Length: 213
Length: 213
DNA sequence: CCTGGACTGCATCTTTCGATGTACGGCGGT
DNA sequence: ACCGCCGTACATCGAAAGATGCAGTCCAGG
Image (tube, rainbow over all chains, first blue to last red; front, top):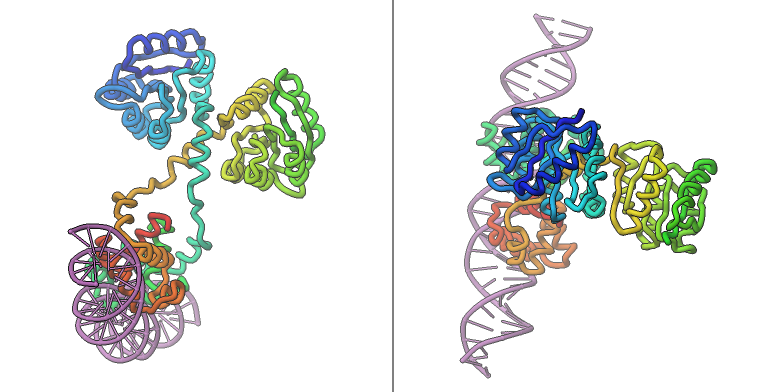
């Protein structure tokens, strides 16, 4: 039995969703929330398997509510909305939603979606998928050389200095932050430049950036 | 009528796919390819609406074939594979695939998938969707300040210099690349540092990185 | 115990950077 | 035509960055 919490502010729509879900033999609606805060609170209390979450809701929007539910690992979240605006889609997915559906979804597909997400799989409305793929494909591929392997050759102190370089700090800045003489900082910089085969702190900074340090 | 090209090296599997597709009234299998190169060639010739593409194929793998078909805008590509390895999924999507299915898909779902993609929508196997979402969510959000607005304040020359800084070049390097005296480079660097309120070329390089210049 | 190596630390010296002053061509306004 | 403004360009000079030599510490192995 899949225990579902329905979060939707418009009571008519909410009633419709509940009706649809109840028609499935293996789905049980354990609660209904009318706004985001209530959704989070009820999720904490009822511990449903899944929250069916609207995005447009008063007091706390669905994306933020999703973020909280996911952060506390209360339940999987299936987001449901009328508009497939990019900010909704990407926002919801970044917030940790396991699925994203539009409200024009057929009753049968909605039930299937709930079952799918409950199985630990993901699901996205076809109309949205293309844009998600496009967005994903546009993501720059992180690649340099064999990063960690080269990083291994650095000592702890050198890595700390490298991290500072990545923030654009000067030798003096680094000296005060790591509590050593500027001359010493220069030594470390010089050493790590040699090990990484770079010719200036600028390149080191860029590398640190790419490595996300 | 949706015109489909089936690319799959194992003839038994290919025959099965064709059989399934033929059972749909609005789908017409216009060709069958046994390897990637053939798939690309036949796509060029037949101009199908959609290519159903296996990943494991001789001569040219499905991902590369997909890349080519998409690059030439020959058709939409629906990728089909036995293994949902990350490199396949992400590779295929980056190559421009409009959909990604596993071979354990039901006949009915396969037909639906073809119809969905033909409508210009996207479709991803539920088992894969979660990982795609996770990967997507992990994507760092590019954000600093009001980047373009600040970039607008730079002159063309200054932007060029900034780009070079992002590559970690020295003033001398930049001078030779942009064909000006080193002294002039310094002027531009100094100016853009002032406009961007930065204190060193290192910070400028980091910024250039973040802006993807 | 001692010896060699790795890590960290500092001082000195050369190179590079960055700020500043200046100059010249193009452009719009009056 | 004149002026001021902007973009581009270069030279000078103090400040920073980087290379190099060397010293103290800690640890593993002999």
